[in-house]
Length: 62
Ligand code: SF4
Image (cartoon, rainbow, N blue to C red):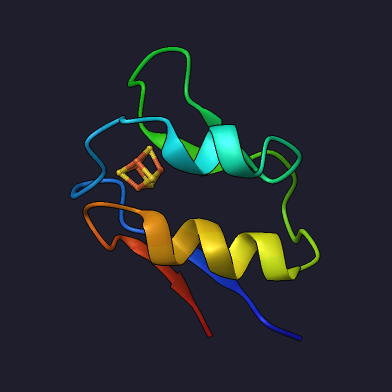
């Protein structure tokens, strides 16, 4: 099963991933960095698209 890894150090809190995939990504209320909504979300095409559109390229799917 594919795994989503977010490099929160590089995340610029732009919110693109949250906009594209609100079931999977959210911004942490304290740090405003992207994080996963659930521990092991299903990796849909929308998740791959959000990773592709991330301006910092800090969403890795493996
Ligand atoms: S799209 Fe990338 S930089 Fe923007 S909030 Fe999501 S993980 Fe962070």
